[in-house]
Amino acid sequence: MTAFPLKIVTPDGLEFDGQAEELIVRTTSGDLGVLAGHTDCVAPLGMGRATVILDGKKRYAACIGGILSVVKGAVTLVPTTFEWADEIDTDRAEASYQRAQKVLHDGAASETEVRLAEARLRRALVRKGVASMK
Image 1 (spheres, rainbow, N blue to C red):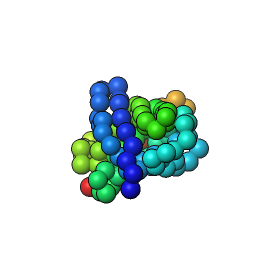
Image 2 (image 1 turned 90 degrees about the horizontal axis):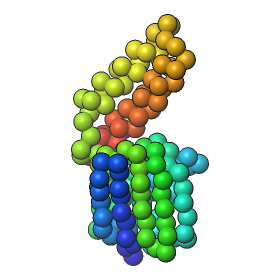
Image 3 (image 1 turned 180 degrees about the vertical axis):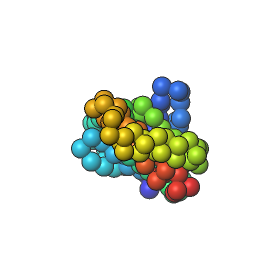
């Protein structure tokens, strides 16, 4: 399979800079797959699993928020959060999940607290799901 240049940059720094054969990410309107020769585009990222094929092997990551850019064959992924499956702290993800559940089951939680807990819960579920794919 033909490779293309892929750069993954988060607010914490460079996560990946090399050649990839395929990239699949969750955008705000659904999953988007990128292969070599993909048309130029820009897409806002949603919250979900990213699949990157490198040297014929799949690697998975939790990819949350940000933007994807394809320009003249070069692909740049700029997520707010990006964690490779083997780097996810599952205990931390579980603790976040439990904290979110507690707020969601608290009848006295404010609307803002509920919205934040729902987002925390979704992030924790993505991270836990991706971590199980190590």
